[in-house]
Length: 165
Image 1: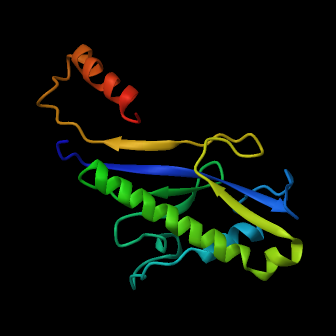
Image 2: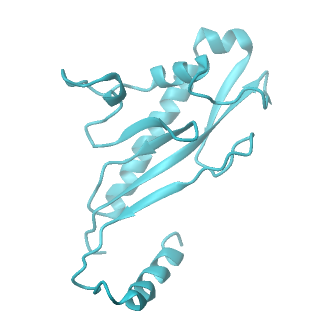
């Protein structure tokens, strides 16, 4: 495969269980204490002297973890030069989220309430909110003239339809 600049953003569904059972009233919300505990459990990258609180979740590989619009946790990779490297960055994000969830579940706040947090790279949470993943691609305009959308669709649609096979 030819090198291409690519990156991904993955939205994570969070589920809180109470004494082993899902509780739809325990919604993952940035205003709640359990959300603060989760984000404070994320291993922090080294901070730059000039960085602000919202910048603290940028990692050396260009990735970022944050609460996205819609109140869900999102992991965005840095831009990389190929699919194999992108998979490695995605896996790194999975490990960071796993570590944060495990750490949050050990917090006294969770233990006192019989709560356990679960994270899912899926497309729907218990409240019916839908989630997804975004992909970013860089294409050269030299190979596909702007006026020829037929050529673009003939080349791009089959790729998008089969890329996950």
